[in-house]
Length: 223
Ligand code: AMP
Image (cartoon, rainbow, N blue to C red; front, side, top):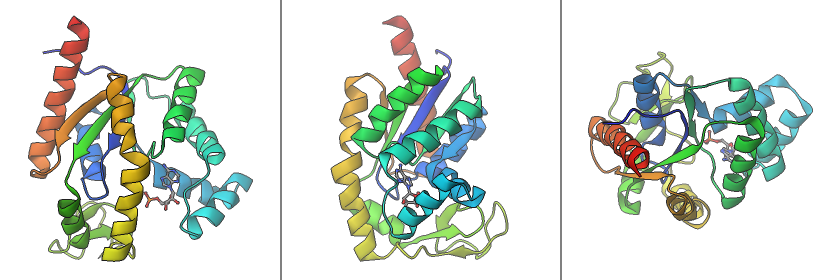
């Protein structure tokens, strides 16, 4: 079976579909960095830059970062990452505008082509998972409410996110369906998408992703 080529792997799926967890597992498997959009934006805020101040004002109000800021920050980050073997991106692109900006970034900095990994999970299952989710205040790893109070990865405290309540979950899923889900079609039409059933155990989803990526490479190598 074909080897997995360097790519900008993009995790797509509703909140709760396991994007962060699967990004980490795939990163370990392929020895790649993970670019977590929220972390990159928070690092920009921490830097105290003018751009960071604008990001902070938006994030604190619960708004998405504007497209110009997003393109500037993600572009600089991906350019500086120097990841010849690719990178796994979590949390972007979230909108059609961002998908287009991502194309500009790729051609400007001569980065590997994108390949979206779509984790398919029905809305009712996503809601159930989010209501039972805890995240680490230190490294933001997520786990189930039934997990120990200390994060397995960094020892930080595991807490429920303030926006993991039913009203906020429904609002976030509505936004996902309106703004992000259309990107599934966008990437599929460009032959830049693999789809995996997210409604399985963590390990099963991981194995399915690896298999789907290898199958994708075989198909594109021979076509
Ligand atoms: P998160 O850590 O994923 O919850 O992201 C924290 C905040 O960063 C979000 O509430 C948004 O304000 C912002 N953010 C994250 N990803 C994006 C994105 N792709 N586009 C715009 N803003 C984003």
